[in-house]
Amino acid sequence: MTQTQPTQKNSVAEVIRERRSIKLFKKDPLPQGLLEELLNVAVWAPNHGVREPWRFIAFQGDGTKFLAEAAFAFVKRAFSDPEVAAKRKEYISNIPLTLIVVMPEDPRQREWDEDFAAASALVQNFQLAAWEQGVGTIWKTDPYINNPEFRNKIGVKPGEKIIAMIHAGYPETVPDSRPRTDASELLKIIDSYPENDVVE
Image (cartoon, rainbow, N blue to C red; front, side, top):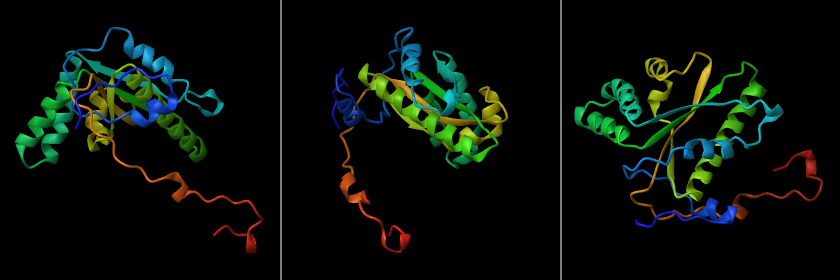
């Protein structure tokens, strides 16, 4: 595991390849205004009909302690070992910023799928924009994000879905990359009319 910080890059491809999911953060707060700057980049994600199916709830400073308490109420019931639950609470309390990305749940399946895809693209945009600025992130979907008590405590309304819980801050450590399967091994190119009218 390396100790290097992410550095500013000019190439989108470089940022995509070099971004890492960060689990350990320094305690330094992010500069004022940086969150809004990153979100204003992220919202340029493609979204059908420009519905912009998202809103955001951010926890920083003492707000992270409130978020940790809300999560702890669920975590302490999920883990038989109270020490594990306490460590999880402490971990969340010490993260400089946690961003909750919330999507309104359209009752129409097609629109729901489109909105989920758009909000997910926004999350990746946010992570890439953050990495370009030297800020690490990790996209979390812990079980308690679906717990009604937790959702109510942090201001998520009925009919909304938490797409992501993004922890963000300056990396304490940056993990090494893990290999990816070459896309050519997963790609099928159809350049002629299939026999029996079916792609196999």
